[in-house]
Image 1 (tube, rainbow, N blue to C red):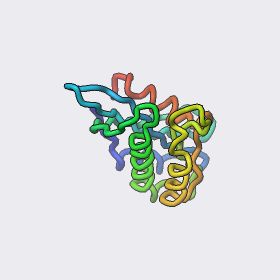
Image 2 (image 1 turned 135 degrees about the horizontal axis):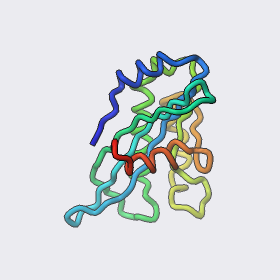
Image 3 (image 1 turned 120 degrees about the vertical axis):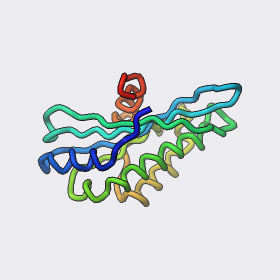
Length: 156
């Protein structure tokens, strides 16, 4: 599995115009391995060149044990997504300063969905650590679409 090379991403972002927009997201999927549940966490950085041209996608997949006891309310796994995207933001903070940056969370605020169980904690954590207001579903395309699809790409 490929890892994000933060230095390579930073160099790419520095080479772009100030109009370039950066979107960070994380998604996860549960997988059962030898009777134990794991989660594949997919982190992505979408660099929208000039804010109106094509994009470059950077990403990685991390597999960890999943200890959520209620699969319908995956609080621990969802908050791990939040922690991971926050850590990624902080690793890139120097190059992100002064640019349009969005953090996208694959969390649905609608109480009909299990992911709503962490909405206030997740939003508060990102506000506190990254000093940005995160986007959630349906506006969180970097998490809901880019990260979700990255794992199936041959580069993953």
